[in-house]
Length: 430
Image (cartoon, rainbow, N blue to C red; front, side, top):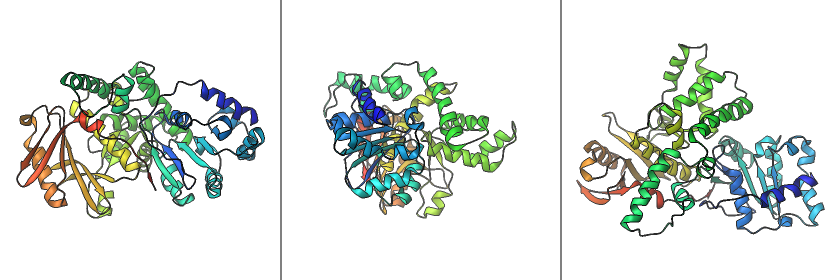
């Protein structure tokens, strides 16, 4: 353990770490729970925190519970890591960084005992939302702060391409932004694709295999790999649409023997591992919302552009990007997120609810001019505004910006690039 703790710090110093626009506040009262998809950069987020805080070797401890050196040790040896650090440096660490902590047996009690001491600023990562929702909330009794880390946002993508984020842009700069946005919508934001220029199709095919075998077979002990793989592809092919698990079950029954229960269980895993997300329909009664037909979204646009055999619709790619930004806010505890649809088929893409109040309604449409915004988009927005008592109405477009009075409601039109650049992830205690 002594050799591991020292060697790990030397390894971290040699890494090329990029800054992220994700805020996290060190606290001795809470553990910062860094959550998000596999390969989104959670470990590198911790490395970046170490550099941003300018921590000396004696001030922090870092343990990655997926490292072979740690897996080969007994639990009692691993849980003594703070004492071992003190033996090495003659003082306790101020910061504790635990990567993929779910690999430690009975990790909850170990983490809770450290939080209770209120002597350390603790950061932990995990790739399972179940790990940091129900389990963390019950085991740690609300002593955590969610820090969502997803693939690079568009703001970060621009910065990595040498573009300066500012308040006002020239026409030339706006054209460059839209060029980068077109590229980003297809490539996505996974660090290996953006930074290492790995072939996207190769990356996402291999990524799918890793998700199947690491997150589903190893972690959840699933037995029917073909069913899991079919579900993953079904999620990608259906992104931004209503998603019927029962329909997927019927499709599978034509090819293989599988139970309805298995398909529903596997589909729940998709959300737990941050591969795909189910968006429920808004109802004033929570029970009705939970029983509604969900829409499905995926953790990165690159999945849609590189795993299916057709070019995805631009409007769908735009909608998925908006969803991901809003989902980060929901994971951080800023709001609740739904879609809205009435019996006539009028639909609003996103309903943002804060507390007991609907705070904003958002439509997303691939439009470059007012004449390209379909009447059904505005009609649904106005109808939802009346029923949900919300006057904050926004239509995210490709390249049209204005504010217009429709009926007695003010509706804002904002280009996607501008909306994306105005959003930053923040964390909220849970």
